[in-house]
Length: 492
Image 1 (cartoon, rainbow, N blue to C red):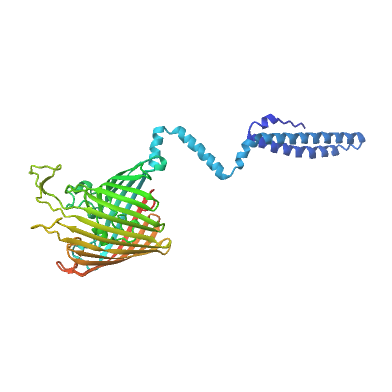
Image 2: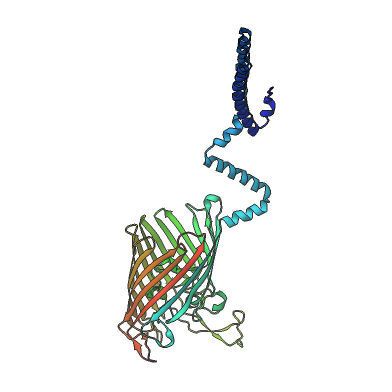
């Protein structure tokens, strides 16, 4: 029997090389045993036969040595290719990703690549907020008075449906431009957006909760400038329920401004202090009702990583200098609207002093406190028939939140609001409320919130089950259901 091998053919590929190596070794094992028994079966006992056998064994040993040499040569030739198979999984994955990215670069046009890069830095987010609330006063009309969001009793309600688009600036990536758009629908929209007493044309802007563009001016550490409409940062609480400690909002949230239109600037002095300045049309006004421009001066401080403190001073003049009249007026100020001037127009100022602090005392316990003082005059100076007597509101709120487990949270709120002159409620009174909230985080992006709240006052202020009869208190129990999804992390 004759055996032949071709090292050149075996070395033609990595897989063939390994196959030939195995074949050569197996063949070598087959040759020696097969040769020896063949000679023994021939029955040759002569000395010449023994010498021939020894000679044949020597030849076979030489062939085995040659086979080992060929195997080593094939292994050395195939080492660079086969070595990649022993790389760690992370290196193989990285290599595969690099090859995939390279292939993607070759198949995607530069214009399409720019679009994909833009979308990579843009987040699209959706939120749904609904509730069922029961008022134990059984009020006429099923209305919870002096509430901002949970306004209906004994009704399944869609509080808010929101769509949020955000493309923030990123100086590190060479992008100083950005912007944000929040579209909002539901009961909260009607509560917060476009009051006809403040807005000449409220329907135009009602569903635009926020819409502003951002540019970071290359000054010092970077001056952040926004232009457009944005949610007010006066007060501890804000719009999106998922980011609040409680489901219902405080009296102070309902009383302080909801939104503004104009310029907003922020400058970070250092890692612990940022200065704020606004120049805006007015309080809850996209389109102004007078020519005065309101201002805000404030700062946000972080003395420690666990403590943040915000201080704001707001100066405004929100008395209108004109009234709307039928379209027969000869002065069409805006499309579809006509106005007549108010002579003389009230010129009294609005002053808001607002401060709040949040403190993450431990990983599970968070505390918050807010204090406010608001004063407004109808006329700046006293004159015959023009009183400068002030109306003012003062008080504050305290907050507590404790994380029982990753899925369960307890929270509480207590507040006091002294309304002297009826600036908030239309009646001089002292309003108080206490709220207890229990959260069940069903899954990431789905929250069930159970709440008990008691509102009370020193004056009859809340609806009862009898028409025309007011009560000094109202108690409500609420179940809130909140969903949200999208790429934006943290608070909205």
